[in-house]
Length: 243
View 1 (tube, rainbow, N blue to C red):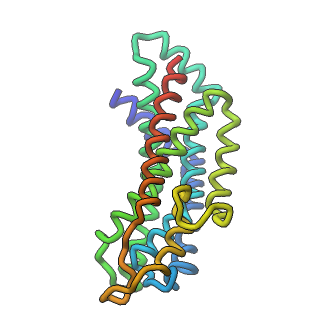
View 2 (cartoon, rainbow, N blue to C red):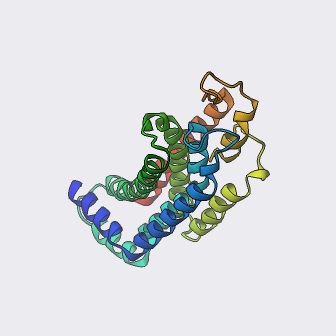
């Protein structure tokens, strides 16, 4: 199985589509940093956890579309032929699907790592800011729930019909670029777009002149809900894939 994982990951990374999506995401992340985040979000510093969370939230639509494009590879005609041959061998179908999904997830994390490293270089050069440990919580609370939810939804729905993946891509865009359709910083704010841009305005200012970075129970509960739901859908989707 490890050999299959590295083979799938290598095949994904050296694909022209991967390079195109990576390029688009990196360019958009640079534009986001230089045009929006550099001004600070909700009157916070550009390098505050609030601004960094908003930076990631702005990029999540593109990251989710990238992930969904990776999942489409599992359901191409070529992959269906390979799957029939593979499942005729003693290999465990569920584990085989899990390995392929792990490779797709690793590809997603590679793209995410690029935009994280780019932001750190940006902060280091422009602001001489190096306290990147402040960004660990914003990274975890934004990337992980969205990754798990869209991964699970894509695996479950694509088992019904592969075209549903393109519907999910549209949904991923709408969630990012139309944040006004959801209530502000609530249980339903998957990306955290509204949360990071408005919640700091309601908080008292700390000794450093910044609102203390704190997450309300409603937002944490929502992210846990999306993560758990995504894991459940991923399990059911892999069971369907194995059949």
